[in-house]
Amino acid sequence: MITVSILGAGNRGTNVYGKIINEQKDKFQIVSICDVNQEKLEYSANLFGVEKENLFTNEDDFFDKKRSDLLLITTLDKDHVRQAKKAIDKGYHILLEKPISASEEECLELLNYAKKYNKIIMVCHVLRYTVAVEKLKELLDSNIIGKLVLIDHIEQVAYWHQCHSYVRGNWRVTEDTAPMIMAKSCHDMDLLQYFVDSRCKTVSSYGNLEFFKKENMPKNATERCMDCPLKDDCAFSAKKIYLDDFVKNNGKGRWCAKTLVIGEVTEEKLLKALATTNYGKCVFDCDNDVVDNQSVMMEFENGVKATFRMTAFTQKGGRQIHFHGTLGEIYYNETENTITINVFGKPEEVIDITKLTTDLSGHGGGDKRMIGKLYEAISDPNVEFDTSLEKSIESHLMCIAIEKSRLDNGKLKIVH
Ligand SMILES: NC(=O)c1ccc[n+]([C@@H]2O[C@H](COP(=O)([O-])OP(=O)(O)OC[C@H]3O[C@@H](n4cnc5c(N)ncnc54)[C@H](O)[C@@H]3O)[C@@H](O)[C@H]2O)c1
Image (cartoon, rainbow, N blue to C red; front, side):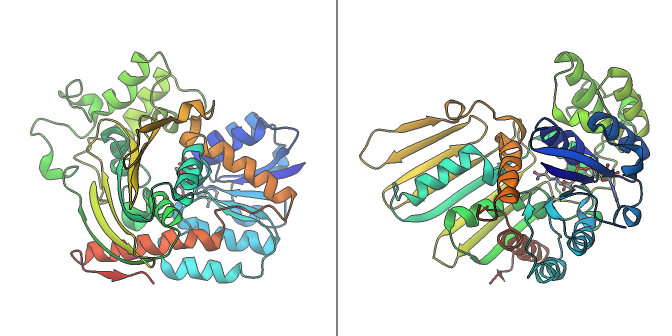
């Protein structure tokens, strides 16, 4: 039985990992929670049955002593390194949300701090734990398409996800969180260097905030969507993205509605959130500065080249990754859950990911599978896992160099 504390009982801490862990009562027990928001703290405590004396609204009080075997650090981006160092001092196994930090100095500082640490630090690069990524890695390593030469990778954010997280939400201002390439796409950089099996050497990038800014606000639009004459026509209106979607889908709409409220989503709670929080604001009248489109070129130490594009301007979300090898191609379509293999001169083969697993919920099944691996790794020190601090820093260094290049009009930057 592994005892667990949650630091940051928000969407990831409570709604995702907390719930997954709480369903496995034979393996885990949640014993302590810390969150600066009293309402979220109480909701999570009730959900997981945590005693009052083990609830904290202040991290200093929480870190007074060690409270469990495992600590989930699921606070916002800027808190991770400070809290991870405190957790190391107390001797916790740590599940650390990504990004570790958007600062190279902080990433390396934590890596150094954890050098001789003999407990688990697992970074939540959850996509590595999906069945789809496992299959892709297996195919690439089998050399079925010969020597890998080039990868073309596109991340379709979807217009409503961009509006929710990167225009109205937590990740809209670089200074408060991290640049888009880190906040959203460090998963993609992590996957690229994992697939290529080599460190990234150089990068070059262009990107900007093209659309979600004041100069594009329609003349008759208002500051808050629920008061706006365009609320039923504007694709980006908060009424359409949250409320109408919730009603149309009988309460089973987009996941983003869940992050506006505490506990069960209701029409009443959504209306209140739209009237009082940033999530009810016009997308052309927020203080966002992160990019809504970006392209990157990369060269790896083993000679493989890759291009990466991130765009807000898609109807559906999902990655599409096209691998070009000397003897064939592999095309991964995350939106359709398919992997298409074309070995030159042979018939096409299509793998349906839904036939390989029954559970694609939560990052294509990655959230649950990562918690499974975490349990194994804590229980048996000989179990290896793919998202250690050391391995995860690699994608962060790529993102940091990419952002430097973007801010320097695409100038080539050296990662290693
Ligand atoms: N691995 C992934 O794919 C993935 C997906 C989404 C988000 N994330 C990352 O997970 C982290 C959490 O995101 P989220 O969506 O759960 O955000 P959230 O806002 O829902 O949750 C963060 C929680 O931390 C609490 N908090 C803030 N400061 C605190 C402090 N000093 N001490 C204790 N609690 C504090 C907040 O009150 C909130 O409840 C972020 O770093 C985010 O970038 C990762």
